[in-house]
Length: 344
Image (spheres, rainbow, N blue to C red):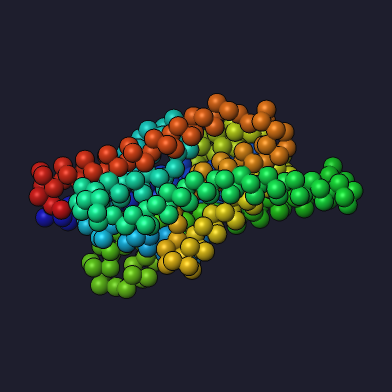
């Protein structure tokens, strides 16, 4: 009986995590376009909801496999519940209430590791995959920063070389539509990578209970999570979008386009290429990738003085805290369930 209750509660929490994703991480694909004044926050989150869903349904399985099967041998019903509850507590009830864009990826990955340590011990953690994930967390924001910096400089060089009138209505319109296009691509890339944070822990459980192949199970979970992401983006997202769009660096259409396209490319490539090479997409922090691209264009367009160092420091502090806090929370919740309810 307890297992059924925990499963039901866990699925509710998983949906809540999807809502949290939509609210907390809708900023990544939309911040640049909103910050540049090309599109309203509401229209941006509608586009985000649509194309994040498309990405989740078409390629979401690439990272769901990593979260559900790549880090620990198997995630049980109690383990899935503990992981999702730990992530929800940290992200939804602390960070989002403060308007801080912490990494949901760090939270759910740390929570899965915490469950794995409590249930199996360090020896049973897939350390190879885990360390590759950690490396991707370090390299992805640097990649997006570098790419955004180079892309912005390249665009400026071409504008000067071709003597383009940047103040002309035609050029402004082309660049604005390009920025909206990069928003769409970024939302799609977000869906491919981040849907795993909401429902990836339930892959094995869905396979066993539904007696279905893993791909079908992941597709069903992706559809379930996509609804929550759309709801969260529309209801909770605007506050965090405002933080990312206006407080790290001021954006115009050109800097917004360079940052958004760089962010989208990094998220998409870190999802797709590792899956093709090692069979596991990497659950990178789209928050960090987005922040890196914003810093990159800020440096390229105005130097260090164009970066709000206080906001960057605050965001970085919360990002660093997320993994250990999630590990401790998840392990504690799992051990409490096992001790008091006898469910493992």
